[in-house]
Amino acid sequence: MEAVVQGGEGQYQQRTSAAGGTFLLSLVEGTYRLSIWSGEYSKCIVSGIEDPEDRPEAVFSVVEEGVTPIRLAVTTSDRPQPAQWVGCYFDVPFYRVQGTVRGPNQEPLEGIDVRLWRLSGRYVVGAPTGKETGRGGVFAVDVPQGSYRLELATEVDGGECRLGFFGPDGRRAPAGAVTRLSVSTEDVAGFDIALTEPLSELCREVRGVVMDTEGNPLSRVWLNFYWHGEGLTQVADGAGTFRTYLRDGSYLVTITTDRGGDCTIEGYEGRVPAEGDSFVVDGEGVSGLRFVLSGTPGSATRRVSCPYIDVITTELEPGWNLAGWTGPETAASAVFKATPQVTAIYS
Image 1 (cartoon, one colour):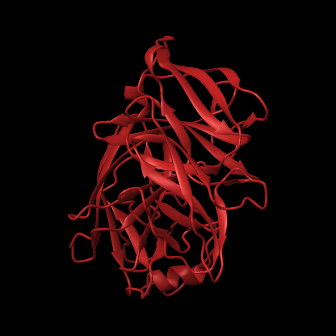
Image 2 (cartoon, one colour):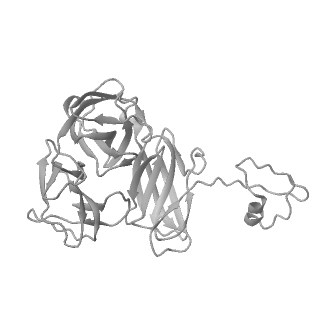
Image 3 (cartoon, rainbow, N blue to C red):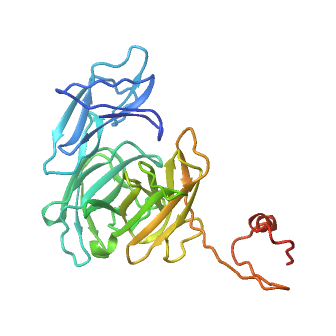
C-alpha cells in the first residue's frame, strides 16, 4: 500500500505491507491519496473516511489525531495480471470502457496491457486502472467518471514496452496531444485500436551501463527516458547495467543520483539525435551505451541530463587555418575556454 502526497510528485510518501488484513500508515500532517500494489486485485474501494470535496480518488487529510479506521474493499481480477499500482477510490459509480486491440492485419492481439490514466486538468491523478486484452483482443476496464488517456503496453522478453497513447479514434499520438476519453454517466464501447506495425517492429531493445569516470559501475541509479512528452523510468542493477524497450525516436536521458552533477554519453554510434537528446532508436536496437557520471557528489539526489555531444577533431597546420562553425550560435569566449591554445578568432 502507498500513501503519496496529493498534488505533488517526488514528495513524502509512506509505503506499508498489510498483514492479516490490517495495515498502519505513519504520516505527517498533510493530504494524501491511496493506492495498493497488487496483481490479484483490480479495484480498491475505500470507506471509513470522509469525501469532503466529492471526488472519486481516495484523497484524505491527516491532522493531529490521525485518521482511523480506513477500510478497503478489493475486487479480485478476472484474469491473472502482473503486479501493479491500483488506485483506490471512494464508493462512487463505475463505468465500463470496452474495445479491441488488433495488429496491422486486423488480427486480434491478446495479452496487451490497456491502461487508463485519469486526468485532472493537465495532470495525471494517481495510479492507472488497467486490464489485459483477452480472447479476440477484447478489453473491458471499469473506471469512475472523469477524463482519461488510454495507453497500451506489452511484455517483451521479461521487460515492458510501452506502445504509446491512443485516442477514441484508435490513432496513436504523443501523450500531450492525444485525444482524451471522456467517461460521464454511461459505459463507453466500440474502442477499436489497430496497430500499424507488428509488435516485433514496435519494441527495440536498448542496453547500456552507468559508470563513473574510472569505469566503476554505479548501481541503483534511476534512468529516465523522455520522448515527445512521454517518460519511462528504469533502474540500473547491481552491475550498473540496464535493459529497456523503446519505440523508434530521439530520446533524452536524465539520471537521478547523488553521485555527480555531470553526465556524458559514450559508445553510441547511431544517427545523430536531435539537439539536446542522448540517442536515436531507428529501426533496430541500441547496445553498448555508457552513461558516465562525473563531478562532485551531492548530499541529495538530483536529476542530471546526459546530452549527446558530437566531437569533431581538426588537425591544424602551421600558418593560417580556416574553420567553419555550423552548430547553434555560440559565444567566441566558449571556444577560448574549451581550447586555450587558440589565441585569436576572426569572422
